[in-house]
Image 1: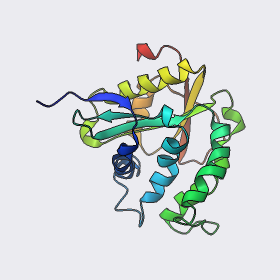
Image 2: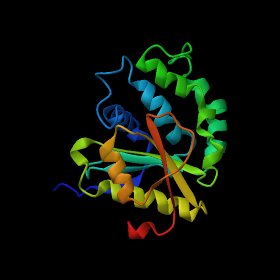
Image 3: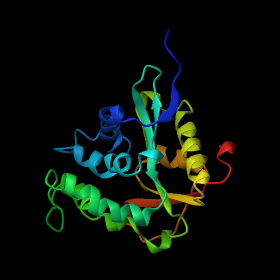
Length: 210
């Protein structure tokens, strides 16, 4: 008998599935493979460093048979995370994705630039929202309430650690994601960002009301 989907803590053996989820949702919520020569630059920038540095804040949507089909991950302290990204994570992957020229010339180089500049995460205007997150769910598992459950789990974990609020940065072009975050109680934050992205934030209070 097939078990029901469940939200559970990330396990090291989930890493291949996590990488796949990231790649298949990285291009404005769509599959990045048609647009990037090496989509692993996304996983090495936006997914793997979080489970390497703060695995206790990584949760997956398990399809009921042990396979991760979605995840939410992040950090409780963006400033500290950026520092650890520079000193502990970047040396592990820098050779795989060399620092690009300025300005970047290809889509891959644009993401590699983000990889090599973790200090970009530290924005003074976001100090009141010290945590940040990334959430991705495979298309076949979207629209069923699983994203809400992942968000509730992550916000509860932050609240239990005494973290008051959280932010995220998303592509303006990803309209479905913006609608989801609006339903989750996120509001736009005035912060200096590229026109292609927007910053959203919310408190960690009352995740049970999502």
